[in-house]
Image (cartoon, rainbow, N blue to C red; front, side):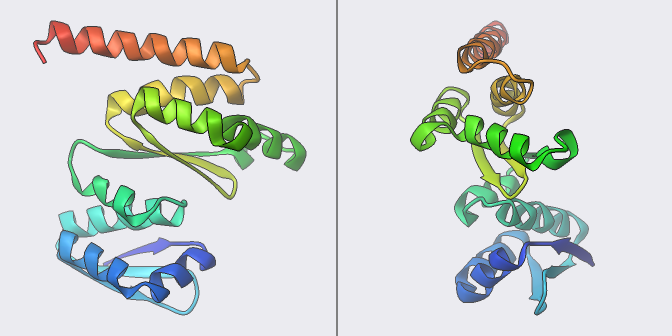
Length: 174
């Protein structure tokens, strides 16, 4: 049995939309039990539990269930950056989150469109779902913004990582 913490407002969404839980149970062949607080219990085969836990963690970090379910595919990964551990000041944390999202979501959308990774800025975290290459590309931009670099520099680094990945795939015959 596995347990996963999910913020209370996300647990409410799981409870309200029972088909979300049913979808995860079907895809992972696990049984999911939601308590009244913020802990979700998962029981089933080890591999299914692992996948269900990953999906529910991603859902808890703000991803829609359809995106979180990509984690059932062995080629997709979840990565989360806890900004609270990086920044001591709440003001700085909010500034960095705003820079990652950008005006009207423009920065986040651009990073997602180039890297093809999915990004969620939720609470004090920035989380990503994608292939290793997609996450590497998106993290190049996000890390630059976290370090205080300009948006232009973030895009340059991400686009360079994207070109490098494309060249490696081309050389490998894909």
